[in-house]
Length: 519
Image (cartoon, rainbow, N blue to C red; front, top):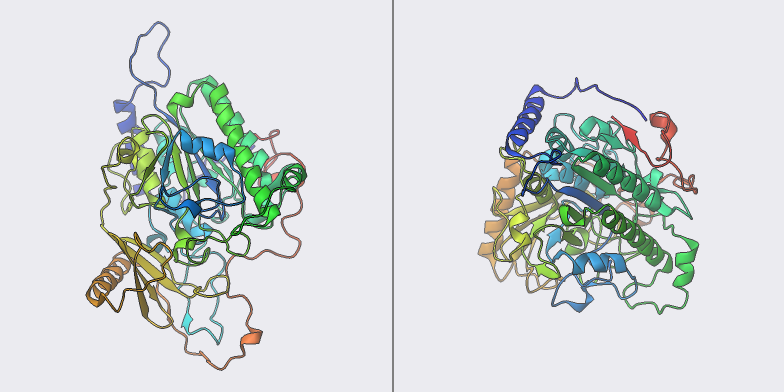
């Protein structure tokens, strides 16, 4: 356990915002626990648990994510605990991760801003273009900017205990530098390499989170808990007993990988442990649980059908993901068809916690709370359009070239920077993106293109540019995979035991099993 009070690198503007947030909540809220003998009819501020899976597709659960699309659930994986969460909560059929890769999505969840505005649009280091690439990728940072205000800082300033367990992947300044009291340090993909009996550190993350909840319930303090899992990102790791239970199960037509299925079901078991702990602590009626994925699945292990393609693209398979919410005032067992996106969660959590405006400058999301009890409202954002920007070459394969996408109403426009080609889809009627309408509706396509360009200019998005060394005759057989998340040979296989936080020696001595670190 380590203590870190150094905030010298934070801007004064940011500190003033957090101080103002704390004062506004103190004057407007009630104590978490009434004083002895005091009578009160007011509810204490709610707890919030945000569970994030990694690389889990929209159809990656045994839960139908769309009321009218039967194959919006897996035909092979069984996730009974998430089924229960959906029965007791609300499913968002049109939910989008902020990006098709993990680092930009995580930064966006934490700040409420799009990856384009943050300048964090990719994973991995910037590199020079290969001669066979028509454009040079836009530059991107992999480090969460120190002057950005995170949801952890806002809620900690509002009196919440805050914890972050699991995958960070946002640079060497870890969660403790960004508002989290207890955390695992600046972890990355390699820290998720634990094997049986704790594959992907699923059960270590779960136990650290359970201990954190129990501690703060005893102290009468509201908490914000992030459980950001390494599963179901590769390498594929699962418990032997889970694999054995799948031995006689028929494989699906879409999903058929038994190890990926077992890893998915181990993650579901971890979710079930959290649900059970919340019940044991008696806080289910005052705790919001949010479950989402950081991007779509990689089609090699878990095809995203009926969606097109997957991770590393802005086609629907890369960004449309599961989103389930359970908690006070949430209509149980229902669907919502409004388009929602990961950067909406920051203002949602602020509203749930009683944090009053103004929110940090540049906030792009809108609160989802009005949708919890009624399907009549829409998310109120500063802009009508929702824009995704991935000016990079993905992890190989069709469609993984630099691209942007904009949604307005029922329509989605994609722009591909290698060719400047536009594709237009009515995404309500054509979820598989098979019918390009750009030639039939050229005026709509041009209007949306102009709105896309205007947005990217307004947020100062980095753009790709022509590659001066482009050689169309470069031999394709010599082309390596064009970037993305890569793992060193043998990495991610070190920790097979059920033990303390990942790489504890790197960040200071561990205080004991699953206690995480304190900042």
